[in-house]
Length: 122
Image (cartoon, rainbow, N blue to C red; front, side, top):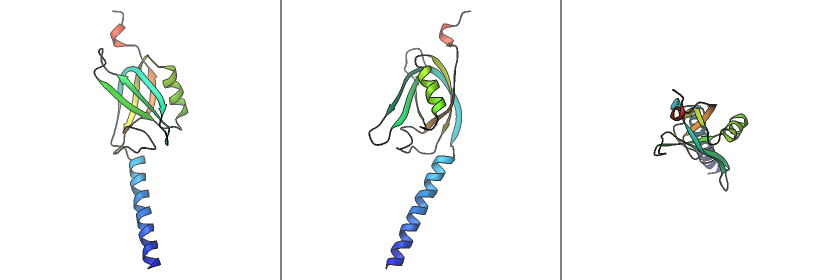
């Protein structure tokens, strides 16, 4: 009986590890989005995650929510600096969201500041 229980626990742990590795390393899509950075914060009670939003329209009707992994300190510093400015985010979308990584499936892998298309001098 102990041998069966041990095998069952090992199988469950192996399946969880395989699922997590797939969710973490495989990306569903990659892309870029531009907009005004309207929110960026470190939130959570048990798992602290970095979450943000960009507004992709003049009225703020189209909001893109994203997460940043905690070990990406250079991206976190850039996003804190660019608060309220127009930015271009490069992101990867995962197959599922995992609560200890972030609140969304979209994870920023690079950020650059851009000129706003709303206030260009023509």
